[in-house]
Image (cartoon, rainbow, N blue to C red; front, side, top):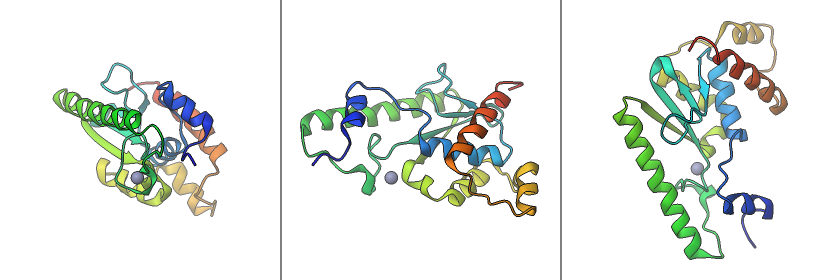
Length: 173
Ligand SMILES: [Zn+2]
């Protein structure tokens, strides 16, 4: 049996890069809750990074484990068309490397977060806190916490807050 569904496979074959994936939304949400300002998918930068933090001169890529060949259980080898996939994967890994090098040459710090790491939202938060030296959550998030509102936001709310974050980050950066 194939490891990805037919529709996913057909997207991959067409080489469509998925954006707004669940792992990506989780990272955006964590960054937003820390009060970090960011922009999404800046096409003028190598590799169109998923999140761009201009003030920190930092970009974040949220990598799908399968597509970018993370050494974890999610990156299983397809059973069919092995040669096709081997070449495809090698090209992806090379492209990632090239993007990292180009971004670094332009003075950007590059952070890569793997899909499997986003399964644990508090570890994503800690990672961002360390990377950006943020101790505390954003005031609105602290208030929600004090009031005992559950901190794990359902996905549909994440999408809404992401849209808000995108609007906010569209200004003054
Ligand atoms: Zn992984």
